[in-house]
Length: 193
Image (cartoon, rainbow, N blue to C red; front, side):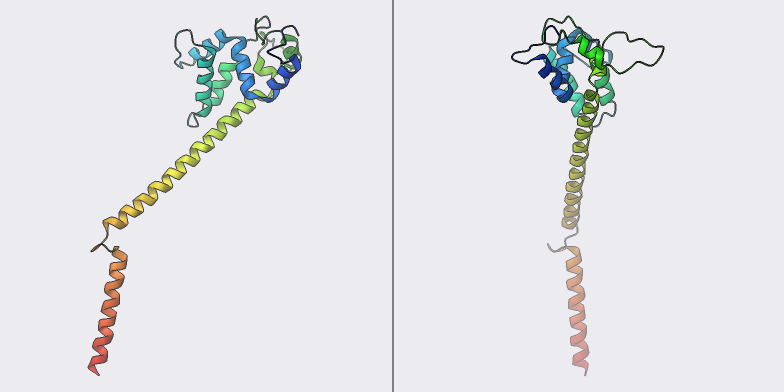
């Protein structure tokens, strides 16, 4: 593997990170072929500034990851990351073509691969994306449920406030009236004897 160094990282450390760290793998794909990633984002009609930086493209992916309401987000992220690998990239991402070729899933009979795609070679990245998106979705659902509980509590309090009679909750007021009437009835019946 030619260019297998980034900072003090070895080729094996990069490969290990690609297979274990979703964040690193996404950055690796963007850094390897930013023009193709930009094209994929634009193809999904997701707005990008003119000549976006790698960070801006990463922010698009992060926004999709965190959008628990968009059921298409995992598929959109997979489409954005489904770009051809550039083995000759001049940065730390180049020189891993042999590794990716060896780790590509076998192609169905009669079809040919039209170039290396990193997401196909890194089996866990798309599963990790799906898991992260599901976690954000669950978090959104929990927030909605908590908000619904708070709204219900506020509604119940407001209902109690609206039905107060002389500053006393209606149910308590009625209970006091019934109790007073009951006591008056007992006093009246005991005085008749």
